[in-house]
Image (cartoon, rainbow, N blue to C red; front, side):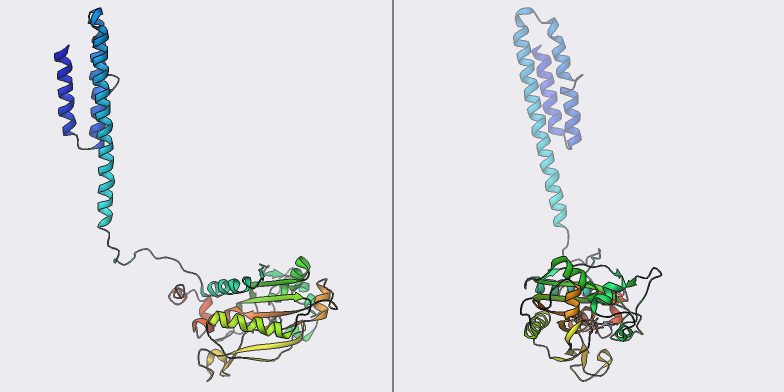
Length: 342
Ligand code: FA5
């Protein structure tokens, strides 16, 4: 029996030193420790061993089996570690200076300014609201003190749908719903896409973004409005920008203002982006008309408020120096993908 076991042990050792892969180790395990392996075969000789030697024979075979199992486990671990090391070495050959072959996406410049504004206003306690793009006449006009056949409707050439609804021409269309949702006091901004049947040019699109702001509380005055407008603009541009405030008419404000920004494309000299005026209408605003407050369920004797309708797309033009507003809807990736790292 001793010869036979020594022979098996020698053979196992010899073969173990020759293994090169995990598969070789597994084959070796099956050959010696498998169900029909050499150790099982050895164990089956137990029946021919004299009774008094059976115990020591069994112990010896078991000890050989345990040693072999241990050797196989160690060999497997070694192979796995070598595989990881080979992988690490291969990755060290990767050249980080090589040009990236995978193109990554980027945010649209309007999304970038919108997010920046959302951060600025939420830091001042404003909530951010989302609103529909398809609205009805009441939301877009009547609740804003613009009854049917009011001439102010002509300012916004509207896309009507067959069912009488319309594509939102202004983010002000959400004012009434937001007043009813929160009641006073409230501070909210609501960015959104607007649609007007416009003849397009360098500063006019038929599909553009606005961001409405609404603040209602006791004793809100025009100075509050001016403070928020100034803070917003200096944060967005990171520099003082020249603005002018002039009277403006909106049926839903009393009084109403036009806030213009000195054109940052031409520095105020006049160019196609500002229709050669040197100024760009950016953010009309005003104190909320008492009729609009009443329609929103708010008592105008107790509360006042301001609202503004920032031209988000025009703001993006000024911030990023984009000369023609139509670039934003053009789908030209070369133009639109360059603003992410700013
Ligand atoms: C309004 O839409 C009002 N709802 C704004 C408002 C809100 C006033 C709250 C008072 C209180 P207006 O039509 O002027 O106003 O548009 C607001 C801004 O949207 C403009 O100053 C401009 O920056 C932008 N805008 C308007 N029409 C277009 C267009 N066709 N293309 C690009 N931007 C536009």
